Image 1 (cartoon, rainbow, N blue to C red):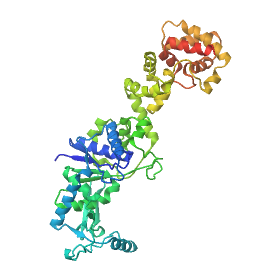
Image 2: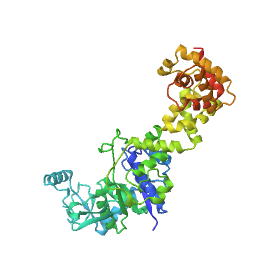
Image 3: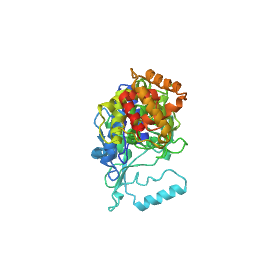
Image 4: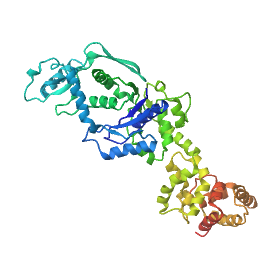
Length: 467
C-alpha cells in the first residue's frame, strides 16, 4: 500500500502555526514511508473563503518547503461528486429524506438539551413512507446511522477510541438546497484522493466517528486516523495571537527561518529521544505517528528564538547577506556599495552568534553599512567627550601606521597607546566603539575595526575628531 496523506486547510484565514504543524506531520509521514503528500483547499464556505487566504496558504507552505506533490484539489469544484455519493446512499438504503420543518428541529434540540442528551435529531423520518412527505418542505438527506453497538477507531496517536452509536444521530449529508455538508465532502474527497492516513488536530476526533459511518455505508476502506493534540500557549491556555497563533508569513517577517520553525514545530508534540536540533532529513528518517504525544504542547517563543539562533550561527554567510541586504538598503535609503558589502561579509561571522532572528541580524549589522558620518545614539554621544575625542585623534595617528590591518595588529597598537599614556583599556576601547559603531554595543572592537578596514576606520575617527 502506498501511503497517501493530505493537508486540508480552510481558506477563511492565513496558514496559522497549528495548521503548519499539521502540514509538516503529514509531509513527514508521507516522506518517511515513500508515499504522497497532497493538498486540498476546503473552500466550500464561499462567503468566508478568499483568494487572498488561498494565496497565503500556498505561499506559506512553499516558504516552509511543504508544497504538495500534486496540484491542490479545491473542494468547491467537487460538489456534484459529493451529491452523487449521497444519492448512492439513498438508493442503497443507507440514507433517507427528512422533511422536518425548522420549528420541529428547534423543538428537538431544546428537548435533547433539557434531557442532557447529545442526540439532537430523533429520527422521525428514518422509516416513514415517502408518501407522507409534505409538498412544501424541501427535504435534507440524512445518513441512516447504526443505532446499536459502537463505532470504534484505532487511532494512530490516541490509541483505541470508541463511542456508543446511540450517542450519534442521523447526520445531514445534503442540505435542503442540495449542497453537501462538510462531513460528506471530507469523506468523499479523501476516498477519491486515495488518502490512506488522515493526520489532523484532535479537535476533529469526534468527526472521525461520524465520518467512519459514512465510509462504512459506502463500503469503502476507512483510512488510518491520527489525531494530534492542539498547541497551547506557554500558560497552558488555548493558543491565541498573544501566544503566537499568527500566520506563517508573520514569523517570516519577524525574522524566523523556515528550517528553525519546522524544527520547532516538529518538536511540539513529537520527539526522538533527547534530540533538539533535528535536520529535516533526520526527521524524515525518524518520524512515526506512534511517537506523537497525546497531550497538548505549549508554544514558547524563547525556545523558538534559541533554535533560530542556532540555525543562524550554523548557516551560510552568503545566504544571510542576501537575506539582510533588503532590510539594510531600506535603512540606509539605497543600494549597498561594494565597500559596504565587503565590510558586511567581513563582519558577519562576529554578528551571527549575537542574533536570534534575521531582524536582529539586520539591526546588528547596520553600523557596517551606514554611511559616514555616523549618527551617534545618546550613550555613544555621551562617551565621546572632548577629552575622548582628543584621545581618538591620537589613536587615529597610531592606527595610520599599522602595517598589517588585522585584529592582532589593531589590538597591539591600542595597547601600546594605553601603556604610553598610562590609561586603562576602557578609556580607549569605549570611545573607539562609539566612534566606529555609533553605539556602545557591538562585537569585539578589534574585530569590528578589522572588518571595517583601515580606510573606513580612519575615516570614522576623522569624523568624530572634527565634530
